Image (cartoon, rainbow, N blue to C red; front, side, top):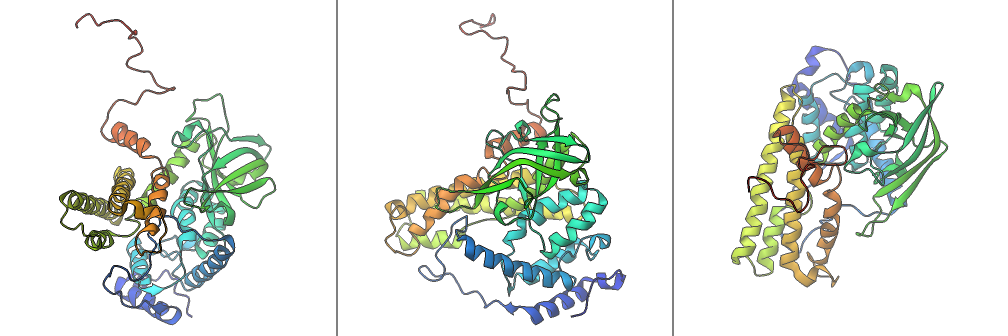
Length: 427
């Protein structure tokens, strides 16, 4: 297969690129069968938000996914819009989106293993790592040779990320990292991780943080699975016991880790808020018909509410994509997108609970009933991932609408001078 990476401007022509991409996909993958109309009781019956797989099956799936990424990368389709000096092809985001749309028509191994690494960690490395480190890590990440994870949350610092306590202490040209992270997706199969640590406890909490890339296979790193109420273990807790990290793997300046974290968080919310999850509107509509509730006005109201808010989410995402096409960074619509998504997932969870009733709690083997328990039980986790709904509302209220900051332990309350049991003089 000819290596298509080139600086030739003629290769930037989108029509020519589509022909090249289609040829590659035809030679290396199989077209998906044409999707048939949804029929209740037929086809896959698993709308769960988190895929529950055993670790051995996961290892095999990861190997297949890595092989596909390597094949794409070696043919020039692994990092289409990446800079040539770092192993990318140097084309536009439009070219990358065109390939993604074409690839979606083919049967290829899942690429979910790389969502966090390429969607959140890699952009942060590109923006904040030393050039030589970016040149070392990014090609390997986009080729699938190494997988990345994100290590932010701690047992006492989730939504209030700046309260994290994991320490990194300077020791010559290395940092010694000690502490715990939690709710880390993919930590058990990741090779590197992005971590934020406290490097100066005497500074205000947002000022004393520093970001690093860590080797997840280094001595002192221990990964333990966390069992969820869905029955699976998609998340992990990770312990660092005096793990040594070279200073060259630091992200940004010392004590400027909050800016590094914000880069990752904005990319995270873009990835999580990117679209609907679960069964889809058609599946919900057919559910109401199957159970004889299509004419129930309350059920119909709940259903159309899901549809309308789903359309709002889609238009919000289209606005973010339009900004990217213009070369702009999307603004508050990313925080809004994630919030819109989880709110609609909550509506969906309430809807199926109303329609299915007891069928949701007992596995009788009936199609389209108990299978929804994975969605209902997984929904609270989605409302926390990428920033809880409450925190996102605060971000939108304070940073977009200009509302006063919510009182907290590190803010001054507007009610601090009021005394319990007293009456204002103008009452």
